[in-house]
Length: 95
Image 1 (tube, rainbow, N blue to C red):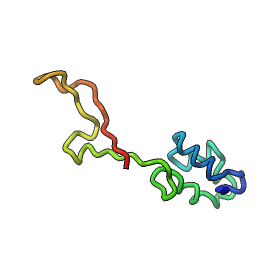
Image 2 (cartoon, helix red, strand yellow; image 1 turned 90 degrees about the vertical axis):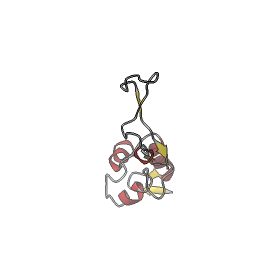
Image 3 (tube, rainbow, N blue to C red; image 1 turned 120 degrees about the vertical axis):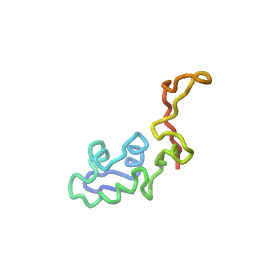
Image 4 (cartoon, one colour; image 1 turned 45 degrees about the vertical axis):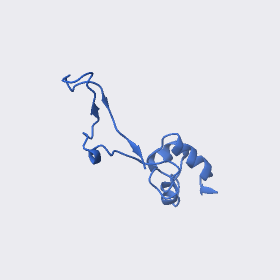
């Protein structure tokens, strides 16, 4: 199905662009030219972005605070009593 008639951009192209890392309408405009002519397709194209109703990409959400961990990451100590300034690992869970 065509998402953008003006630039002949298909649903498959939009999904591939999102799968490759596009997260905003600006990303789709730069990569595919979506919504750069008449703009009628902007709302439809946005639905394919992460969090949209047509998205095939899960939006990632940080659940660190829900389990009592710092939102910036988890400090890893090498042993008991070690300083908590080791490498930080972000906690990200897919929805």
